[in-house]
Each structure stands twice: as structure tokens, then as C-alpha cells.
Amino acid sequence: MTLPAFLRNVVSVNHKVKWEPPGGKQGGCAIKGAKLHAFDELWNIEERHCRARCGWQSACTGYEFVQVSESRRSSRAGTVTRCKLHTQPIAHSLPLPGSFFAVCFVKRQASLSTPPTGRVSAGRLWQTPSPLPPPPPPPPAPPP
Image 1: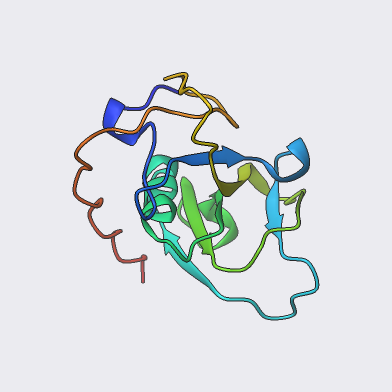
Image 2: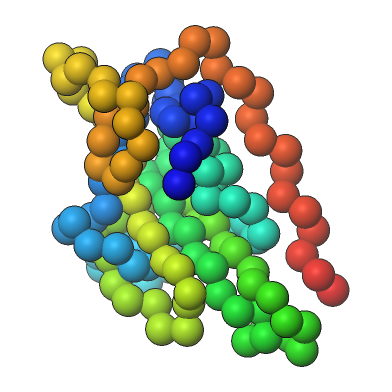
């Protein structure tokens, strides 16, 4: 997946961000010991917008992006995406049965001594653009 240059990295409070899958594994995000935890949930947006929104929000600790079959929710064919922007620490990832695609990334501040690579891949440090682009548009309303 190739992202536009302005989305390869995002800045949270002017710090560089490093994205890592918890435990080095992909799947849905799991919050350790939390019965109810706070997160924002957005439907039908692209993963790059999910990542960008988390990067711009200083309270966001990481995000989960899932693509599922819409037929599980309604009689229409197609896929639906869900983005969860977590505000509590993410402990690990877990499999999400029934999803076509599920990723979890933890947001970390990158070391200032780490040189940016400019490459797009999980767990890499990306070069910060200047100035930042405006936030992505709000997601479309879910189907009735």
C-alpha cells in the first residue's frame, strides 16, 4: 500500500510518531484488564484516515482497523470498515473471526535520534511533513 507523502506520518503535539503492532502480531486491539474502555468508532473510512485521525489526537494510544462483510450486518453485498481510536493503553492483539482484514497499531513517540526512513511499512519511522494537511473529512453516515 502506497500512501500520499502527507499521510506517511502524522504528528501528535509536534512529536514524530512510530506505529507498531502490539507484540509484533496483527489482529484486533485488546485492552488489558479493561471491562469498558473509551474509544471513538468511525465507520466506512479508509485505514489511512483512521491512522491520521489517531496521529492528530494526542489522547489516542492506537487504532484498530477492521474490514468485514456487510452481509453480516445487512442483506446488501459488499464490505464495511470500522476504525476504533483507542484512548487506553493497548496490551496486545487478538484474532477477529469473521473479518477480512484486521490490524491494530500502537502509537509511540519515536526517538529523536532515530533517522527517518521515508518508507511505508509497519513499525517504521516516517518523515514528518511540514506543514500538516487539514484533517480528513468526516466519515459518511452509516446506512439506515
